[in-house]
Length: 216
Image (cartoon, rainbow, N blue to C red):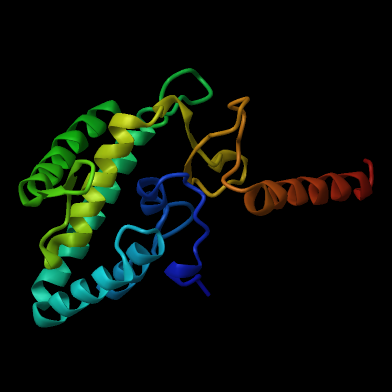
């Protein structure tokens, strides 16, 4: 039985990467942990995209306007897919190329810019005691997709994208994306306790079976 969205390990190192990882892309038909607007709201609060008080505001706005809830979920899924395409195009594969399609990534960048532009249009300057900051998500019904669009912009413009990794699918990993923040830059698995150890265990079992197999 799939985990609840609030049980998903947060391994991305950035909320935008954890968003990408809410869709299982390996194996057969993908499983979407953001199954409805309620799951999206709970996940957004868990990763700190919105506060508990803001979650209440969004929940009331979506309850009063179900169409806004559906639109918000669709917008977040669009950002998630677009960001996935862009980041795959930054990851080097074993042959020195990229793991993604640069053409698809270019189209995704256009769509992501449109999403962020809409979020920026709704943003407001807020005066703090020592500075002025730009706050995204000032409209409750659009708070979650606007904050997520800004998170996608943030990782694309401020993160070292040469440090984005994909848990190696061809070696038995799950395909989740993460920022390699290790000093050596050699992290390979989303979590060693999960995919890394699982792959090692499968390899050990295969070697033992091969050793026990009768020789012809």
